[in-house]
Image (cartoon, rainbow, N blue to C red; front, side, top):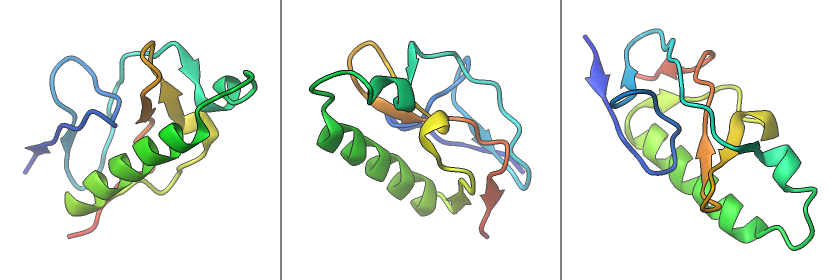
Length: 94
């Protein structure tokens, strides 16, 4: 059974990302990975950390474990919002 979830801190494809026992989703590309963004002077680190924390809290409340969170799997959109991406290793917890 699939269940669709949405959060402003998750990268998503056309429509809502759907989660099941195995997550295999395609996501729209965002302008920059977090690792590249952090190299810029005056990068708003606290804002990025807060966005990642909100995204993880949302995933965990939805019973999803990302299992591969790293800078390459966090993207920053044009407005500077950090979004968690690449749910290939994710797993339903319940």
